[in-house]
Length: 134
Ligand code: ZN
Image (cartoon, rainbow, N blue to C red; front, side, top):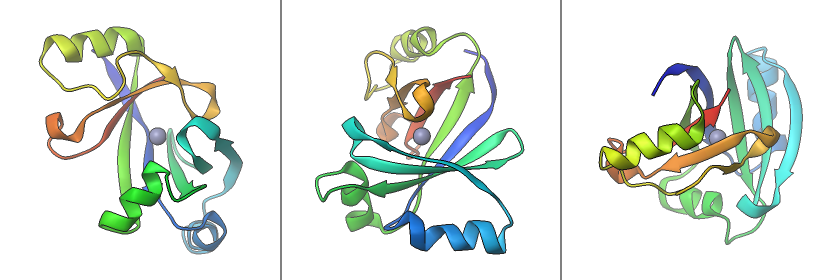
């Protein structure tokens, strides 16, 4: 596969409203979009850092995978998302062929309407990895 850049870093927070002042007032970044992704049970806030984004992830209910993540590991870095140039479906097929455990067998729509898919951290040196169409 061909990765062009880190599309975003996903960071688990308890509350976007409580987390944003750090990113905006201390780091000087600007939040340009907040949206809810219903099927993932998260609210997301996006900030730009060059070509890369910071994606803040706030659980919308206790059953959210983000809520479970915070319960287990606390707030902090949740996943890394790579922008793949030749399509998420192709990248997934390549990963499967190379024995990588997939969370998503096929691309699905993530925040911002992009095609995304997750690889299991068991197969990715402990880092939950997202492949993202750019
Ligand atoms: Zn993400």
